[in-house]
Length: 169
Image (cartoon, rainbow, N blue to C red; front, side):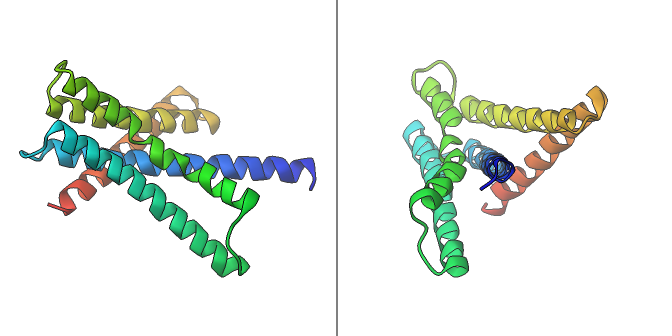
C-alpha cells in the first residue's frame, strides 16, 4: 500500500469518526432536551437514559457495520477491520460524557437537573457551531463564511434534535 493510500485511509477513518461524533452530538441533544422536558425525571434516571442512549447508538452502529461488512465481504470483520469499526464508532460512547458530568454536578446540588440537562444541550449546540466554523475555515471562506457555517450547522443540528425529541412525545 502506498503512502498516499495509507493517508487517504487515515483521512477517511477520521472523517467517518467525525461523522459519528456529529451524529452522536445531535442525538444527545435530543435525549437531554427530552429529559429536560419530562416532569418525572430524577438524577439516576437521567444518567441511566443518557448512558443507555449512548451505548444503544454504539451497539446499533457496530451491528450495522458488521452486517454491512458480512454482506460486502462474505465474512465477519476481524482484526484491523474490527478495530477500525470500534475506532470509528467510539464517539457514540463519548457523547454521554458531557451530559453525565453535568448530571453529576446536579447530583451534588450545584445546579438543578433541568438546568444541567439544558446546559448539556447548549454545550452540544456550541460544539456543532464550532465544528461548522472549523469546516468553514478549512474551506478557505474567511471569518464570515466560517461563522455562517457554524450558525447553520448549529441551527440544523438543533432543529433535527428538537424534532427527534418531540417525535417520541
